[in-house]
Amino acid sequence: MGGECFPFAMQVVRGRWFTVYASMLIMCGAGTTYIYGLYSQNIKVLGYNEVEMSNMALYKDVGSSLAVFNGLIVEVIPTWLGLFLGATMNFGGYFMIWLSVTCRISKPTAWQMCFYIAVAANAPNFSATIAIVKSVQNFPVSRGVVLGLMKAIYESDAKDLVLLCGLLPTLVTLLFMFTIRNIKNGRQPKELRVFLNFFYLTMLLALFLMVITLLEKYINLTAEVHTKSSIAVIVMLFLPLLLVIKEEFSIWKVKKQPPMNVNNIPPTHQLGTNEKQPQEILVPGEENSEQKGMSCFANIFNKPERGEDHTILQAILSIDMVYIFLVTLCGYGSALTSFDQLRAIGLALRYNDRLVNSIITLASVWSYFGRVYSGFVSEILLMKWKLSRAIMMSVVLLMHGIGLLLVAFPKIPGAYYVASMIIGFTLGAQVPINLVMISELFGLKYFATLLNCASLTTPLWAYLMNTKLTKALYTREAAKGLPPGIDPSTVKDLSCTGHHCFRVSFSILASIAFVGALISLQFARRTREFYEGDIYKRFRVQRFSRGDTYKRFNGETYMKFEDGVKAPKTEMVPSSSNNGRS
Image 1 (tube, rainbow, N blue to C red):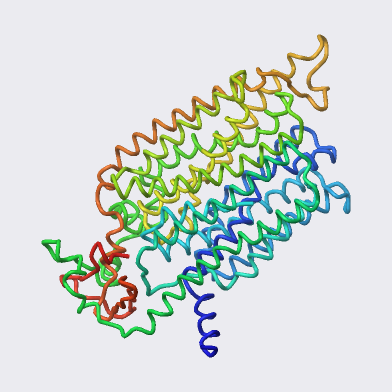
Image 2: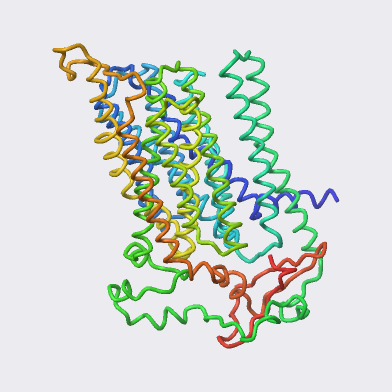
């Protein structure tokens, strides 16, 4: 038994489930952009004016949203190099910010600070893109759940927080630099069940963080409590590793079973027994050979069917991507704007800094819930009722509009608390749905680039909503409270206090969110026929070849796919039945 420990340990760290766990830890550090509001005040005290602070917030959004270029780079470089670039940029950006706010270097000019913030905000796109793409490629049939889980995992003195943002994500990324990769030739039964177990463990961590945050709001926690809670968080971060070991142990046992050829699967385990026509498989390279003579520009407008692999230009120039662009602009643009204004909203309503910081932290936790639940719920709606994911997006945007109206009319008791919950939840909920739709409609071949295309114009839209709309109207409301004869431009820290400060701006943002919900409903109508079919058919059936084998363990079927020549185009392809389907 002792001689098997090392081979088993090597299987664990090389397995698909350990890749998921490593991706989750890397994604923990990919959410540092969302806590900008916690340390932005430390930047402001260096002497930057409101215009410069607005530009910094804009550069933060620009850096995080220009992930399409990270995706293009990831397409052509090794995975480990992409992770190394992300780790280097993350440490460099946050380390320079930390040196600035701790006065270890002279005050940077506004454009230099904007550059540091943009680099730090863009860095997680490398690690996040790689973690998401490899996880989806390793588990294509469970991509809705995978994306919901991956995009959900996020993360005193705010100055120390800046240093932590620079160090911790960098170290974790470097640690798993050679772990995240595409793992082929395997299929495990009941993958959704395993992801649900991951979900329960991460939910436990999120609830624990929420309880600690609420306790800090009402009582002063001692240093001992903070130490014990930190230890508890670390323990809960390692709990999913036990699940990884359990699943890999099952696979380890399967490897000891004698293999059986896929062509010998009993009829009760064949999907083809319920189908009248044999399934077809395209021989690799066959489709490409038919299109070799076609020019690049002609190929752009000769788009494949939904669900097949599109080129980058085919996807970007499609009507479906236009819908996704519009929904993202209306939904995510207004969500980013409202999330960035949570601090200003709390101060305008006369809440103290400690409470406002707690609300921002809780909003981040609710963003986690939104990301997880949107992925899981949309997957369940698709599996059970064949409902388009765009319907789920419409519901999310409708909720978001209601949350914005609560900010516009905050006289309702508890409006600020409820609004922050809704804004955080809906901000997170939009991300997995958009990513899953892109992967389902345009394929996985160029997913690393396409997943970031929808957010390409978000910085411009967020700038218009944030600086030109929300902050401009906020300044106008603040100017109304000045004594007569005082020029608002001469006031250094112009602030507004009262329920009216964000009424007009957030009413407009709510209208934009409702328009996005209507566009998403039309998109759901457009893609209804596609989602009523079997959108994952190619992953369930078309990967089998003569050399594929399967093994049985605990009544479940484990598939192993070979990379050899696939079956002829008209040959019937056997697969597992509903009972044995992975």
